[in-house]
Image (cartoon, rainbow, N blue to C red; front, side):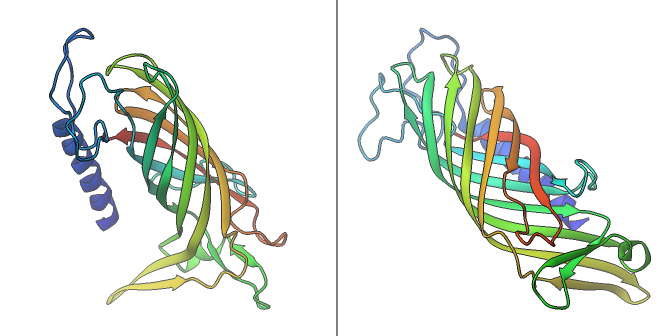
Length: 250
């Protein structure tokens, strides 16, 4: 319940900030000196020039549903296998109207996958094993969570003006900070929580592709990791896959 409340609160705050920070011009010929949000021009300390190229999509939050592909089927995880990617980009225009640009920067990825099973290291502590039956008899809930730092690279296409359609395609090179399996079971006196962080074969270096397709500040988002979560050939073959909604604040 706490996790659901947390995600709803974050989404509400992002929508509220977005509604207050953005400026919706009334026409393409209308010149406005009103700056719609912090860093709209990213012009440092000097006053903004009205003819300076506007920049877009520099702080992006991707709210995602997380699943995996490989030894497990896509969309086999619970609907509340949620995550969030927080990315800061530099928008680098490639033409005068900024209808084509490059985006790069840095970001953080948090994900969790609520699934029917439990992961742990093998007795020799060399690979990861998964048991799909323990959850039915022992645990009420089990999920795999992870944190990843990354550097994104993408090419961006958009129509002219503030009310624009956009399409982003690119990839991320990241470093997996850690993975944990958390299990929860209810008892007569409360809840027992067990967290396992002892995975011997985590794929620390991650590389993925992603795309966004949307309008103005909103977009549909999809991402796929090319390398599996665990690198040992005896471990489950699981590649992270995300779909969701992206919100750009400025």
